[in-house]
Image 1 (cartoon, helix red, strand yellow):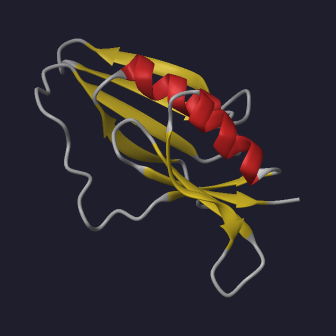
Image 2: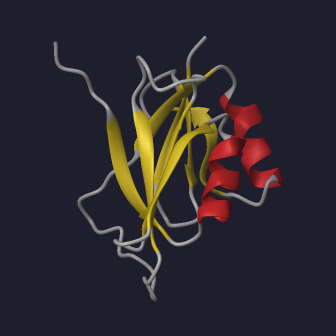
Length: 129
């Protein structure tokens, strides 16, 4: 059986990224420093362990001087949450960027919002009751 394991994104600041994703309810699952390669991998997710869930791999390259270009091909991560409006307010209170307020999907009734992590990756919040 095939299993979706993770999506990797490059980040500029581990602590800042972890603080943002903690606002969304995610936690650090494991970390690996590769001194000879001069990078750190931090895997985050919602469950207490990595079994049975897709994760985000945050890759910190120690010698990266400038910001990364997110590009035009990347869309967004999508996360199901019980109360989109409340999470939008928590992200805002935590210093996060809200790019679309909580409200119904265009031509629909599903409540969504968009927030952006410190490196410019967009996250769609979808209300799941």
